[in-house]
Structures are given as structure tokens and as C-alpha cells.
Amino acid sequence: MLGEFEYLLLTAAARLGDEAYGAAIREEIEEATGAPCSIGALYTTLDRLEHKGFIKTWMGDPSPERGGRPKRMVRVTANGARAASAFYDAVMRVSRGVAWSAK
Amino acid sequence: MEREVTPRGWWAVDLLCALLERDERAAVCGDLLEAQASSGRALIEVGGLVIRRQAALWLGWRPWLALFTIVVPLGFLLSLSSRWFSDPIAAHLWLYVRLGEWRYMTIPGWRRDVIEAATIALVGFAALALWSWTAGFVLARLSRRAWWTLGLVLALAIVFTVGPVKNAAISLTATVRVLLVLLPLWSGLRSGITGKALGTVRTITLAVATIAVTVFMSRALEGSVTYGWLVPPQPGPDGIFGTEDDLRPLWWISLVIAWPAAYAFTNSIRGTASRRSR
Image (cartoon, rainbow over all chains, first blue to last red; front, side, top):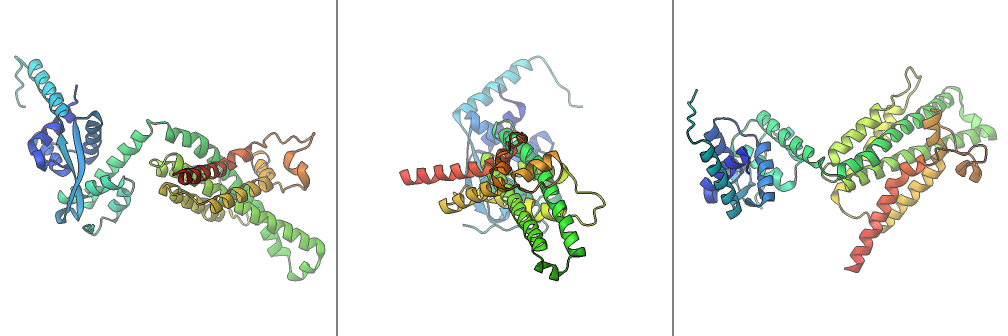
């Protein structure tokens, strides 16, 4: 079963589609969680997900706003989509009949 | 290829990023620039990633092998030998400078003593430099990605295991440690992480030189562990291999300190053989 941060990363990458890369995924996660996302956690999780076969990464083109440095592009694989879906289903099932009020 | 631009004040971030793999370095620094992170924030973020990467390496066996076969034994031996080679030499130097005069060089006995002291000093210092360089080289080869943490631990072990003599009129320990141990160690590490072969002639020269100085200084090395003094080399094979009443039980210490040179030699031979077979 995926970890919670792994799920957040996979979902953010899936939403971003062709524009999924390190900084963009980080921004998506920070917006969704309202908490800062560390570069260390992000990149080590990217490696872990790639090792499990849930994503594929490659170096993209550099750009001036990145000081001429390339991006690490991310694409969710079919296995990754299945894992994220299983996690989502599990969360939905276990949450049945439970309402968490925002404090 | 687009030229990389680094903002002012990011020199510390760049330095820390150098500890990451090339692609990751570019991607991480690019992400931080795109997010317009301050240099302080970038330092914290990159530092966090560097620590995570290094910690993950220690889950493997290579850093542990390097730690227990090089860092611990050679850190200890280089610390002891750098202190106990340099301070007796400094004492001799102090005596010659304070009491000697150039005209004494016409006296054969004095001249012999000076030549002997100078030879032991030069060979001893060469030994320290060669042991340190080969240790750094092999450390980087055994664990290329953890080289800087292991190198740092080795450097700290060398500096702090044994301190210099207190209240000595003259002490060369700190100077010798910097110039003849830490700088060669750094040079060896940098050569080791490039992954390039040393070249047959260079490797043979290195191996022969290291073995020769180790044999010459083996007694001094054992003396620095047992007596805490530079025991000068004794003439003849008995001085090297020991006698019936002086078995030299610590003779194996010389193997411990010289094994990186043997590793570098066999590594280079293997590299040359595989290049020829292609």
C-alpha cells in the first residue's frame, strides 16, 4: 500500500500531466496540504516511486527562470495509477460513515 | 547547452549542491530558483536532501566496509604516526638550530647524525603523505557516493585521536598534519572520485614507493603505537623482520597502513587488463 505522501505526489503528478516536474508537483502539494513540502522529502519520494515502477522521470529542458537548469520531469505509469487508485479506494472505504469536521 | 546562472549570495548553496549527483543538483537548484527561494531557505532545503541521501547510503555495505577497513584503522595510525614522527623530528631540529653551527658539518660524526636525522625526517614525511594519499584514493573508490562523509570522519579522526605534545618548545604536528596528511588525503579523495585509472607507470611508482617507505618506517610506526616515539630504522634484515628476542609482534600494522596502496595497484592492473581485452 502507498504511503500518504506518495499518494499526494502521484496525484499531483497525474493532475499536472505533461507539466509534471519537481517544482510544479511541490507547489501542488503545498497548495493542497497548506503545509510546506521539503525538497528532500519530494526527491527521495520520487526516487522511491520510480524504483517501485510507479513513475518514470527524465531530465527536461533548461529554462531562464531556472537559471538555465533542467527540470526533472515526471510521468505516472499504469502501475502507479493502479496503486494510487487502490489507496484512494481504501481511504474511501475506511472513511464510510465517518465525518471529520474542520477545526 | 544553456549556461547555468547562479544568483549572488548562493555560493554556499552551490557548495552544498556539489555534494549531490549532477542531474539532481541541477534539478534541485533549478526548482529553488524557480520558487524564488532565499539563499537561507535554499541552504536548509538542500542540506535536508544531502543529509537524507547520505543517510540512505549507510543502509548499504560499502560505507561500512570503508569505515572499518580504512577510516578507523588508518585514522588511528595516521594520527599517532603524524604526531610521533613530527615531534621528535621537531626536537632534533630545535637542537640543531639552537646548538649547531655550520662549521660542525666538517666533523664526520656530526655530519653523519645530521644526514641520518634528515633522511629519517624526509622518508617519514614521504611515508605520511603516501599513506594519506592512498587512503583517500581507496576510500573514494570503495564508497564513491559517501566519500565526503567518510573523508570528513577520517580527517577528524586524524586531528583529534592524538593531540600534539603540550608545552613543547617547538611542535610540528599541526603543520605536518595539514601539509603531509590532510592535503594528500584530500588529493587522494579527489583522484579517487573521478573514477579514472591512475595509469600503469604511476600506479607502479606509487606502489613501490609506498612499500619502500613503509618497510623503512615500519619500526617507527610500531614505535609510535607502543612507545610513543619515533624509533629509528635498524640496519639489516633483523631491523625489518625482527629477531628471536624481539619478535616485533606489531609488524602487521605496516600491512594495515600499506594495504590501500596494494588495493590501488591491483585496481589499476585490473583496469588496464579489462581495457586491453576490449
